[in-house]
Image 1 (cartoon, one colour):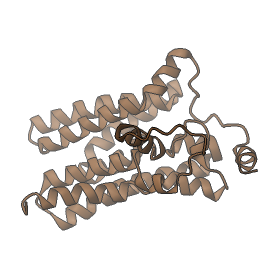
Image 2: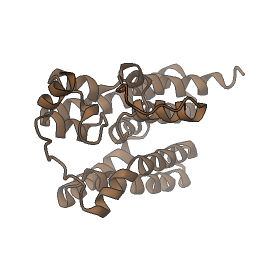
Image 3: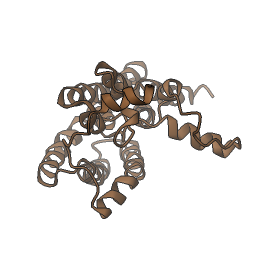
Image 4: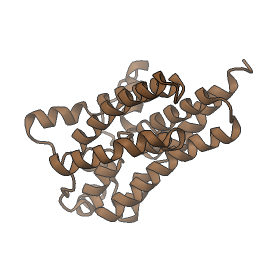
Length: 241
């Protein structure tokens, strides 16, 4: 059990740090609950749609920073356990996507459906704990783990985003290319295989989270990057009234 402790601790440290709901608190600076608008997520793209570019940059910086901090803490605590560092990155990504911090802050409406069965409670918890898609947080984590992978894929992400103007398309491309590159680096001995496995798992999670975006893309209803929502503060005020 003692041998497993660094790995379990790294996963939990990554989760706790990654679960900090940056976008939720940034939205509150504008008196907006971003969970009630757009996609209902607390990631940078939905913050941009809800409160604007300043909120987007604050959220992006915070999400990247918390991913990096979770990994750096584990590198400091367990300097030679590279597989544990990879688990910290996975924990940060999962924490950002499914944050118990948000679950504690969430106030679902009294008319929201409630299934008392264990499966229903898990689904309800997963729904109310939704954070962002985890793109920025995963990027920050791998910036601490292996900076070259981030420096390679970010220009690709930016170019795709500028060309198609869909953050979801750029994110999916990023998490297709990233794991493939990490497999190359692992196969050639530049990084442990755990880095490739973890980035691959993160890619699967990103694809699952983006299923609604893929459906909207197919239906032609996906909002383009930078497109603002209509007066979210007024809508929040109405819902409170």
